[in-house]
Length: 105
Image (cartoon, rainbow, N blue to C red; front, side, top):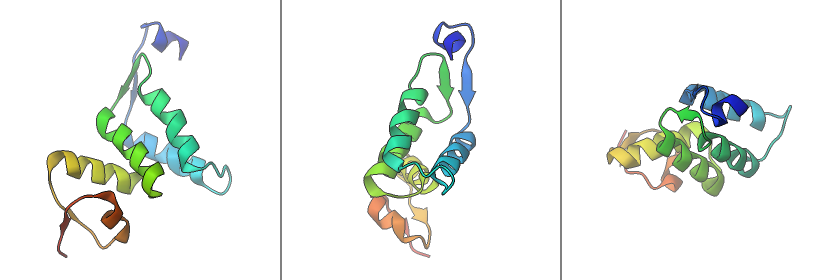
């Protein structure tokens, strides 16, 4: 992290890796609450020397994950759909709380 902060390297974080980190941290083994996970990861994502795939969508998803108590994957899909102004086709009731247009299925 020091080398990234000093501009020596750029750390590239794919969304799927971040999703896996969140899944592991929320697991019963670690048991972290979504608010703590989001706070820590928001700092990482916005950090110097870090290139986050879908950065703004990820930040929005972390906020939604905490505010609406939903899985990160659902929050990320909702953030992307909202930005693109596209509906989401799903049977998942969580999306009703995420403020996205639903595609009738």
